[in-house]
Length: 404
Ligand code: FEO
Image (cartoon, rainbow, N blue to C red):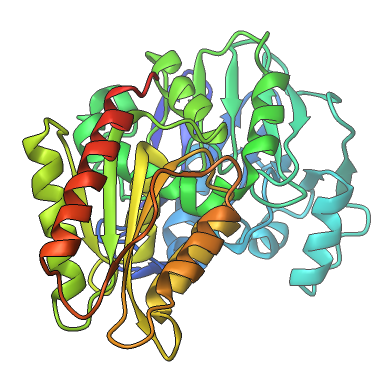
């Protein structure tokens, strides 16, 4: 049975949810599923904005048919060509023979790469800020290359101020009937997952996100309609401010994320001792992660959120414990920068981990290492305990001096 919602007169949500998918992009855990949003405008002409993932094709196609209420589909606007949003283009072309595909040059290049689909005579290739008039509703297109892929564009509905923002402003998590952010307890249910989605999926492209935000800065915005997660119709400034922080790599909060690798608990012990000392000095809201237990996307999201990062790892095969190496490389690849950091290393006979962690942190722009690494030889002894106290002093002073 179709499952649609009229968001505003003429505007319908025709997407769907997948609570079964375990890993987004076969990489990022989805404990609460994912939503694929798609929108249909029913005007003198009808336009669908993006399709959906193949996992929900049946529901999605029923939804489109229901929202059309017997009308043909005139346009499919393709804001993003990643398969989680474009899996139904070929089926729509079969169902609606006069359907025109609206995209840019790169959109059509990607269609021909992904699909065996004859699109000759079906395409409307738009240049930036071209207009597509549906009747009451006039669409225009702001290109947002690399927010997440090169063909991405945002579609702006000029009459009502609706921004169809592709992956930007998205979130992990299946929506629970409440499609609008203001219908949910957003901070409790979706803020962390929005951050985790942003940092891990789009985090590398902060500059490009900034460029896209600037393009729309002077346009009235009454709704932001992303391809995943809640829709924004109230308090847009709140979420725009989050995007301002994330895309400029500014921490949201002064605080410390401590992440460790530990084979037998001794490096873990050092981190717990340090966390205890930080807490006693008044540092609140500490985050401690065992990277072998917590999947990297969660740790990275908190590294984006907080101002300080402590990394702790044993030496392994004369190098760095593999999980720590992967985590730090991933953070660097996502362009995390501007953090204050500290290093704890363990090595029973030839500690090397401090060198690799320092190098990897050094590859993150404007990241400052606050103190000499604390080096543990197998387990914390009195000497390292003193060093941890000193490190707790410097970290605390730095956290308290952080101005956001
Ligand atoms: Fe949800 Fe970049 O696709």
